[in-house]
Image (cartoon, rainbow, N blue to C red):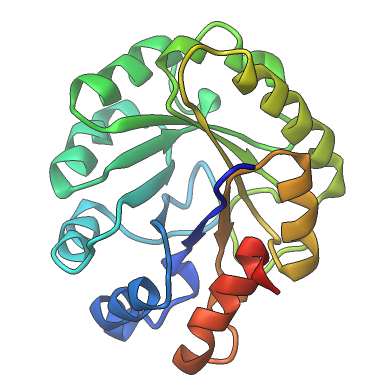
Length: 220
C-alpha cells in the first residue's frame, strides 16, 4: 500500500497571510507545500518569483514543492534553489536541453521533477528517467486553478506507475489539476502517491483544512 501525500497549492491561499496559511496547512496534516510559479508566457497567468519562495521557506517545516511553469526555465533554476525549493519541477518544453536542466537541479541540491502537460507524451520521460525524482502529471492545462479534471490523463498515470515500479529507486508520482474527493480516489487508484490540491484543500476555511486533507488522502 502506497503512502498518499497531500500537497496543498498556495495558489488558493490567502496571499495577504501566506505565512499563517502555511502554518495552518502544516498543522492540518499537509505533507508538502506546492508552489505554482507562472510567468504569463509559458502559461497564461502570472504569480510569484524566488523572493516569495524565500519568504515562504522561513515559515515552512515541510518540503517546498516548486512547480516552474516558466520559459526559458534555465536562467531561474539557481535562484529558486537558493530561495529554498526542495523539489524543483520543470516542463520538457521549457528549455532546449532537458537532460542538462535536470542535472543542474540535482547538482544544486534540490530534487528534480518533470511535469507532463495533458498533450505531452509519456515518451518525454524515457531518456531522463535516471535524473528524475518526481513525475508530475498535469490533469488540467496549466495556468489557472479551479479547472475540471481531464479523465484522459488517467491512462497516463497508470502507464507512469508501471514505469516507476520498474525503476531501481524511488520516484514520486504526483498529479495536479481538478483534484477533489471524487477525482482523488481515481488518481490514487491509477497509481499517484502525491496529490496537489488547491481549491479542495482550502474549501470551507481554516477550520476545515484538516478534514479536507484527511478526506483527500482517503480517510473519508
